Length: 415
Image (tube, rainbow, N blue to C red; front, side, top):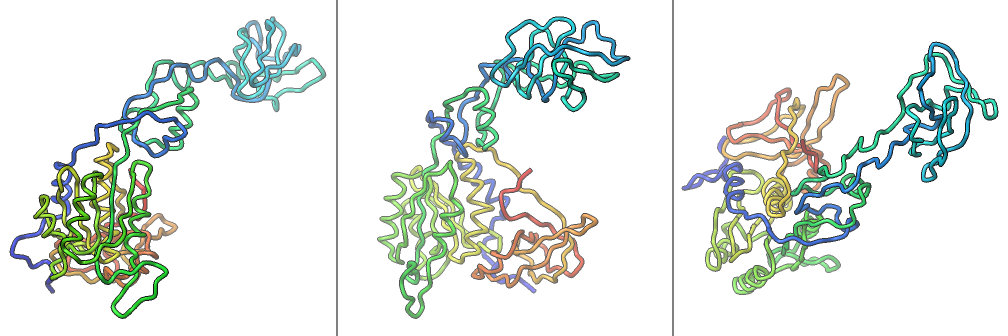
């Protein structure tokens, strides 16, 4: 069996070759802006952030208990210390801790200067102001040293890092109020096609609802992007060209769906060649063969196929890495697993395929994967049910039950 769609006069680019071309073409955004930490979630850091303080700033207790100086204490027998005060979190003990004395202390509270040990409250007996300590108590324990987490002047977060909720907590703990981040990538996207109808309208014969814009709207939901939905553009050469040129003036990236194939009303490649440059058109993958990449002026252009599953696959494997590179975010490798296939899968050599699958794990740790349903590039239900892609290389001619296959998780799981 031969993949008829792979029969081309000129060999199609592999996905790796296409990604390399895009990588070489993309220039990272250089502009930056200063924003408050509260606005920074998901933004790409443009400058390093250093700590102006030690974290913790002072020695403090890691447990609720009793703080004391171990000097002169024989831990081979029980001992009794006199409680002379309390150190609360935010309200330190003010006095001097003398020999034979201890203070009640709570987690996070500052230790008296003389104290070098904290014993948990569960390990002592309390008789009013007298605290009875056990035999062989561990000395020098349950104390957080000054700068134990972060030393003053040390790097908190390096540049070109996409800030997470955890990063925001770390920066806030150092008192960082503002950060400098890369400006957002400006992205325009629209669907093309006379057959597309907006939600809320009745379908006439031959019409379909425009689902791709809703898919792209979700896929482009990222704090590093500023996104403009330009709606549906009919199959009109002049209108499409005008829309491309207008969008290119104010955006870094244009993403279209539909119109990149070879039909008489598919104008994307023709218009891109006329008013910009085409770096490549068609790649050896399934779904997603008719994919155009180029530029209009300084604006990058991705012409995705019209079939909805092809939009999802080409966005995740081709467009998303390019957008992250443009934003300055680090390029991370998607987790790949090997699983035993429990379905027989049809495939002809010629294109790398991304079939939709359902991954599970046995009690012994082995991964199993099954087809999630029909694999047509128009069938959204199968990818909606899937949690992974079954990646079949160009030379593969099908999969039998029990064969081992490569599996990529669907979602933002990386290593």
